[in-house]
Length: 333
Length: 177
Image (cartoon, rainbow over all chains, first blue to last red; front, side, top):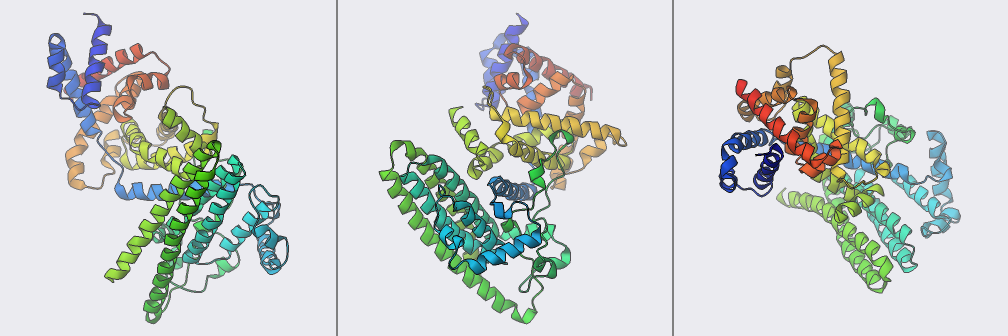
C-alpha cells in the first residue's frame, strides 16, 4: 500500500474521531486491512488530545477578557479623531479649556454643537464636550449615568444618519454606541472594583468622597495593569503611549467613616436602581426607534441598521445583566 | 468563511462585539498551542493575552488571503513563542521539568496530569520543527489539514505526511519514556 494512501486514511480517521466524535473502533472497522497500523497512532492522538484538554484558569480568563475590553475601548477612543482643542495641549491646558467650555456652554458654539450630527462641522466639538463631561464626573456611577445619556444621543444620530442615507456615519455612531455601552457595563460591573484594586496603590482603594490630591491635579493613572509590552518586532505605535480613556478610571476615593457606610451604600444602591430604570427605558425606546427606522430605511441602509439594533440589544443585555445582579443582591441584603 | 470575513471586517472597524467574538472563539486554542510549545501554563496565559492585544492593535493591516483568520493569530503566537524561547535561552536555563511544574489551580488535578503534560511537552521538543508545528496546530490549535497547510505554506499532502510521521515519532518517544 502506498504511503500517501495511508496518510489519507489516517487523516480521515482523525477527522471522524476528532470532529465527529466517532470511536477508534468505528474507524478501524472501516479500514480492516490498515487497522493494526492505524490503532496505535490513533491511540497516541487521543491521549495527546486528552492531555491538551487544558483551559486557562477561569479567574485569569475573566480578568484577561475584562482587560482586553478596556484596552480595546482605549484603542477605539484614541482612534477617533481628536478635536484640535485637545490634540496637543499639556494636561493643565486641557483642564483650563474644559472649564472654559463648561462656563461658556450656555450660549456659545458648544451649545450649538450639542445638537449637531456626525455629518456636521461642529460634531467634533460635541464629542470633545462629552469627553470633558466624562473627565469631570468623578464617580463610576456618575459616569455610567452619563454614558446612558450619551447612548441616547448615539441612537438619535444613527437614525438621523440612516434617514439621510449616510451609512459610514451610521457605522461610526454604532461603534460609538457599542463602546459606550460596553464602558457602562464595565463601570457598573462588580469586577471593576477588583481590577482597580490591582491597578491602584493599596491606600487608594475603597469607599466614598473627596478625590485625592493627585486626582484634583489632573494626574492620571493607568486603569489596568496590562500584560508585558509586545516583542520588539511589534513595538507599540506612538498613539499607544497616549493617556488611557477617561472612563477607564473612576476616581479613587478616600476611606469613609464606618458610621456613614450604610447610608452611603443606600445612596449608591438608589443610584443603581435609578440607572437601571434609565437603562430599561432606553432599551425599549431605542429598540422601538431603531425598528421604526429600519422599516422606513432604503434597502442599502438596512444591514447597517440591523447591526446597530443587534449591537445595542447585545450590549444593553450585558448592562442589564450586571445591574440585575446588583439589584438582586440588594433584595437579598 | 463568508461569515468570518464579515466578522473580521467589522473587527477591523473596531466593532467591539466582533472583536470580542474573535477573542472568545480563539482564546483557548491559542492558549493550548502556546502551552504545548513552551510547557508553562502560567506564562502561556500571559502570552495568549499578549497575542490578542498585538493582533487587535494591528488588525487593520490584516488582509485575508483565503486562509482563516485564526491562522493569522497562530502566526502571531508563533512569532511570540520564537521571541520568548530566544529570550529564555539567553537567561539561565531552567529544566523544562521545573518549568512545567508551575501553574494550574487544582493541585490534585495538576498532580494527576502533570506527568502527562510533562511527557508530551518534552516529547514534542524532540520532534523536528515541522512535525512540532503540525502537532501543535492540528491537536492544540484544532486546525484542519487544509488550514495547517495554509499556515505552513505547504501542500495538504505534505501536511498529511508530516502528521503521520509526527504521530509515529511521538508514539516512539513516549514509549521510550
